[in-house]
Length: 298
Image 1 (cartoon, one colour):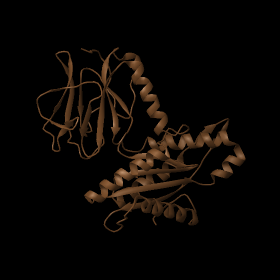
Image 2: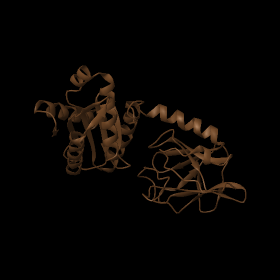
Image 3: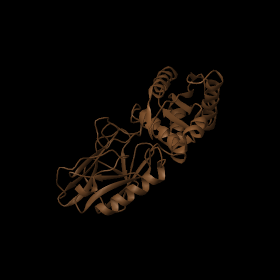
Image 4: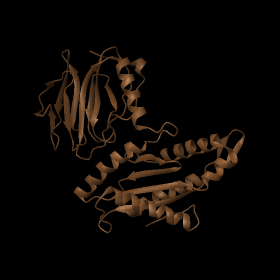
């Protein structure tokens, strides 16, 4: 049985592979909020669920807080349901509280949209898979999610919000006078500014918020917030960007950003994700027209 003081990680993080045992069980998210992520099951157990305290928390609102358990017992990896609301399925069959033996390639289906593949692999294979995932969903410069991952997550979040009549906000912001910054100080200074802004914003957001580089100097955030709370968040982010001092190549640079906010709710019942994006984009343009460095609504 794998044993040791190894740290566990969320499904969108990566572990220190050198500290893992040579052979272990890992779960790869085939479908769900962090598609492609690889999570080793270390210390012989992993609780699957959406509870904030879980190190392997999965951000699927169809999950119970403590939904299912993967664990090692009597020389085998097993799966059991933890009396979840919506149930757990293994290769399409309902799982109960009695342990079901796991084999390489099995599929675990939980929540509304999460499918995990069971893999019995070594550390080198797990590290290679994680690197492939990161390169596929992350922007190489800023570390924010890329446009493709954003589009996928927005479709899923939008469908859930419409189905459950839950609010969903989109915050889109664009750095002010960024072309002039590039022309004056060079593209390396521009890149350093983008990285600094992305780091500052990412450090402020909640785990469930999706932060992506939309293109060029544009960034976007998907937040499960109603309009008033989303407006407070956007204003807080605007102030953080304004206060940021970027030190690069002997320069000290400052930048501001114009924010646009749109919310899917009863007052704005958008029918397609593209309509929500268009509304946030129009609001960002309004912020530019009204003097920049502000938050605007459509």
